[in-house]
Image (tube, rainbow, N blue to C red; front, side, top):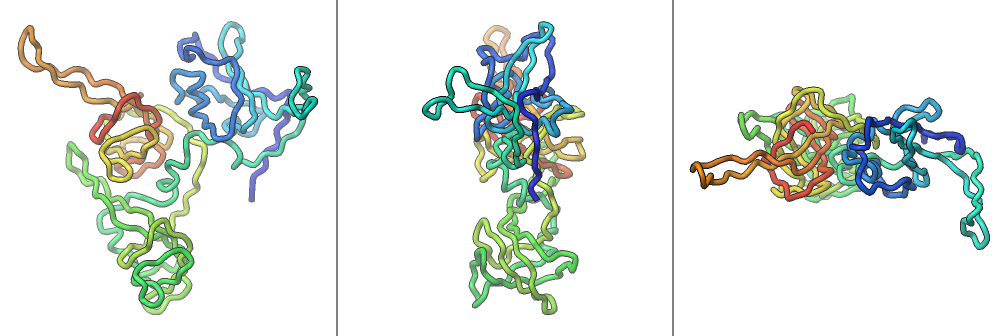
Length: 351
């Protein structure tokens, strides 16, 4: 059931975090900004702030609004100064009265109103379309986990490739507590680049099936959805009961993190903005969903022409990423900023 938000408009202003000075404000920032469809909280924060990942401190709690992290197209964000300190305010649900010709005239009347909003209409914190597959499908598993579960046999009439809407068959030990299973294909095995410790195995989400009948160890399946063609030998794991939240709360990790990018979505080696990457640190190191980390390029090694010998230059900060899914020993993250080409093995640290 859709959750409905009721917000009282004209008198409702969200008061936000204030800064000691203007250092966090971006040069050339606007005085106000109207939220548009397709915006993200990250984009809007970057309009005003040098460090957009600090937006949770900006969108601060307001008891008048149920969830101040839910921002909607049409909301007006203003930069104001109170007691000499900059603050951001959000005006929500201002009803605009059209002027002649359907436009908005210079004497536009603003009046209190009630706006009914669905939570799914709110803008997201980050571009969710970039990470949806990882949020809802793919996962990291332990050695032998895929091999221990049921596996696909074939489709009807011995078809080797199965798609959504087809009937198919699988074999193995099915758990009576689960009727829906995810279909997975074994991918890359991840090892720590320094210690060589096995971190996990990438299980690529292929689709979802529902068990309709079991005869001994053979199950009849309805294929609910597919992201690629399902093939014989693909593994089945019980579907995860995971809620996917469109709002992430960026934060610095509680502990010092020294990590590396160990892989990029799609198996490439070069990394760009909005690429999904895997890093070699996870829950056991204290990483949490929403943690923001800085990406560093290793400093070049140059020749000292005065004293002789080789000198390693300092590492240079080159981007920013945010963790959106954690496992025991590694995590998935989305690259949110980059000012140069990044690559596998680049370093990742606290921002």
